[in-house]
Image (cartoon, rainbow, N blue to C red; front, side, top):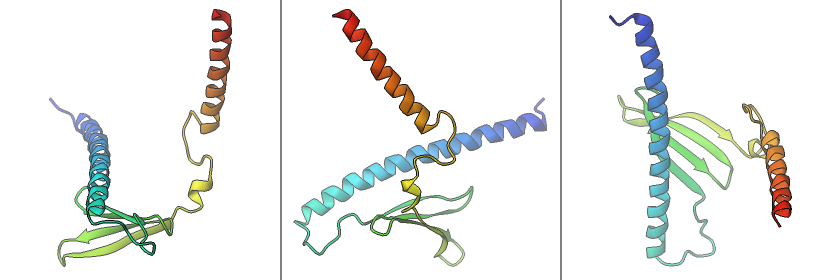
Length: 138
C-alpha cells in the first residue's frame, strides 16, 4: 500500500528530475541556437562595423509547473529579463529584470562547500604535490 508520505517523496524526486531534465534540455537548446545562429549569420555575409554581434540572446523555457516564457540575456547592458507567456490573451508579461553587472564581480556568494577559495587551495596543493612527485621520479 502506498502511503501519502511515500507519494510526497516520489513527487519531490520527480520535481528534481524534471528540473534537471529541463536544465539539460535548455543547455542543448542554447547550444543548438548558438550553432545555428552562427552558421546563419555567416551565410549572410560580413556584418558592418555599426552592427553589434550577439548582443542579445533569447531562449524559451519553463517558468513553473504549468507556465512557459522567454529568458532574455542582454550582453551589452549586462541584464537578464524573464517574460511569462499568458495563454488566455496570447501575450508576454514581464516578470523580472535584473542586472548582473555587479553580481559577476563577486568571487563567491551564496555558495555551498567546497567554496571557490577552498578549491583554489586544493589546486595549489595538487600542483605542488605533482611537482614533488615528478622530482622524486627523476
